[in-house]
Length: 170
Length: 352
Picture 1 (tube, rainbow over the protein chains, first blue to last red):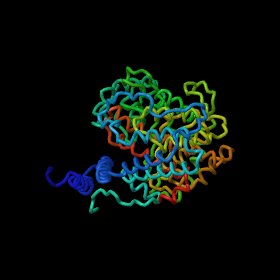
Picture 2: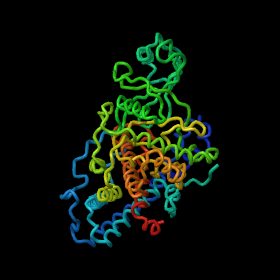
Picture 3: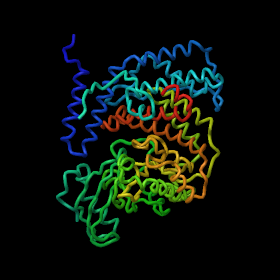
Picture 4: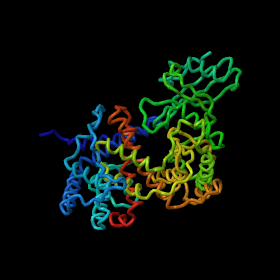
């Protein structure tokens, strides 16, 4: 049992403090850094509150592949099938989170990426359309977390699954 | 003679100021050089740019001079050429009457500053993207600026291979090579990117007919030119230059990632495409083909996505502790949305 307030509420409050009170005190050349920090916090808040869409994409991919016969893909222009990510990865030496600690559905996503590279769905208009629908959904969900303003600027509705929790703006 | 009493902002080159002054003295033929100010300039995402105020006694540059020293940052991205090579490209652009800072001196000797560098004249103006696209006082000047950029690009494209002075630039074999490099990068990357794979497939199956290769800037965009008031004073950042397709830089400037809050202005966020194209066509004598430009705009979005991912690799794998660099990786998905909008316009209504 964790203590209250919850970490996300604290984070949201910290973001408000940064933007509304600390930011204006900074010299102009450091204000962009404050906004970057606020952006990073906002992404973290939206990611924490928006869990679920990855499972939906995974489900969509599972259904997409369940409907299809195995390997309907034509050979690529080079004459042989390519694979994606087949090579071993370099050892992770960075200080961020190891990006290979990925979500469970990544195997299907990797297969999907490889099939798209090979033009696997191009001979079937309905499969191609279904594949594009998944690409749209994946991209829109990622942007809802990462940059909903960009989605809105391009005319896409933000259905508001996740907010930053910021209730006021000076 | 070297300067003293430098401000604290010189940290990083400050301990090399005497060596730098000696280099400037020898390179310019001066009797003495005094560095009076040395400051790290903002804006360089990959390279370091240092402003130098120096007084030259005799030689090629007499009197007080405002210069910029450009050198490598601690970590870089793979497609960047070296500073010695960038100096040669800058010289070629300067000779072709492209508006660039005059390149002055280059130093490959790591004994001077610990890494190669070059020195150019410091030009007045600001390159910050958002003021250029959003400042209302620039409104009337923007179409003319777009036309001027078209003319500048056409002038740059007068530089064609083969060139002995640019012999270090790899021969250009068409976009298929670039597509292969992007795929190789994605193969090494831990996160699958199906949208990029889908767009790369489109590009690989829609290769345009080849044109005579030209010198491409490869980062010709808003944010990489200086404006002093409404006047274009310099085109900057030549580190990605190479032989390429004449439409490559056109597609890059029109790529949505460089519109800085004015997505409706397709030429770099400053104007419609028409004035930019008009300036280019008038100066080059070549009519632009919208389908070719579309191809290169798709490639531009793929490339920008890969560069964004490489930037975050500098944190994720290289250990660079820069929030700005790390967060740039998130922009790859913006490019993917644009790729979907370019290549599947029917899908926009279904998902908007």
